[in-house]
Image 1: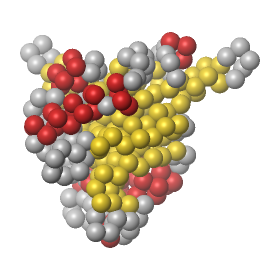
Image 2 (image 1 turned 90 degrees about the vertical axis):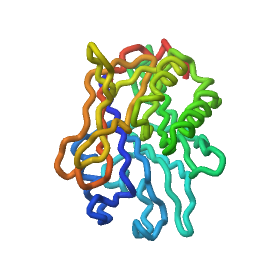
Image 3 (image 1 turned 30 degrees about the vertical axis):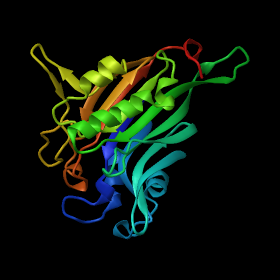
Length: 262
């Protein structure tokens, strides 16, 4: 079964031209038609975004029947954080606090998503549980390391069967790939958005959107998933809609649900 995952820091739908235009974000997302969308910097009730509930409005505009918002930062009016949109039922949602000391509040949204995958002997659809972690890490290297440690030790992550299908994606702010070893060795994940060469590993670059140099937006995975393809959006509108480009990964969900716990 093919499954498309997209992660995108939408910068509150305020583009590089400083205009609040959610229709541009919606157009970019519609063009890629992902099954599950991980968004960062999503406003709710903030004056700068016309007090819109952006997660709800984007989900409705694109026809996603399921969505969940995990807010991290409270403003004088309104709040913002991460949001996950899904074509399949979200059966669990929690927000993991990744704030370090007096640094800006950060979080990781954990959703459990049930994906129809085959049928039992009675002809009923058997759901496949996919664990999805949608994060936005801080700006300093030490802060990001400590935040990643919090995620790794969290009950939401550590309680998952290592054989279960799992996605960790979002804006890692990891310019020099210093976190890669922690996620690959410490958390036994693979990086879908790295490109391997004989000499080195290079991430897909997504920031800044008009001339990408940094691979800040990444998708890690483990369990019953196989990467088919990974790419960034190259549409002209995406170069101005946000300061990040979305990255898109197509997976093959290849094992039967009987191979994992739900």
